[in-house]
Image (tube, rainbow, N blue to C red; front, side):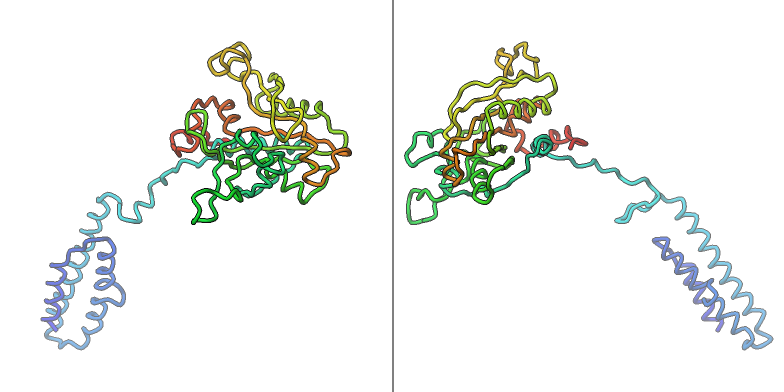
Length: 347
């Protein structure tokens, strides 16, 4: 029995805990109610009377050494810096993380949606891979028509054995294709906008890209006039760029509208005084528009003698560049976090 106690004392002398949990296990093992000391005190009645004095001395020595070991390392652990392991110091303040943000293109698209929704427009969507009918022919682009050359198109080759495309599918060049899809399923009155990504085979520069985002909008009903178009676009411009914004319409040409126009707004930078952004004219072009060509209505089986309508289309990147004074269109697709941080808190 005495040899066992002396062996336990030697174990205590050689014990060195590495972490606080090991020290706590040691304390429970020796000093706990069901620990080593408890067992030894329970065995004292079995020790011969002449040996009890020595037994008691050894047990007290073991107890004192165990308590000293616990107190010594408890102070050391309390003096050590906090645990920096995987869990870390739970008493320290949490590490704050910067909030995310919407992409500026998303911010402006959402704002366009809200502006037009307030005057009764809903939002429609369509596929980015389109057939010839919806992307060209139904919009008054007949085969071999020179107007098809206005847009450089990414055609899709469905037959790998042929060197050239067969003209069946292409990446849509405008969201006007959604107009045809809407009119395939709905009849006037129809009032909707169609935001989405479009693709054109163009050289990438500060003002052009091979993909960008566009919003097509149109309204078809009985008695719709060019005056309705002008008032709608004036409302949009003033809601997007400010109540002092002015607009002007210049004659233009688009295959699917007649008459057609391009719309300028008073420069948001110089307020119409003239600067580098507006090339010292005081005006900046933002969209094309016009009255829907009767041929387009007839292609969609809508009586062009009964119904009229207007349509407009704008590039979201163009609107975003003007709204936030961004000079290079390419930055929108570079995923530069430093640029995106400027839009935290904006929705």
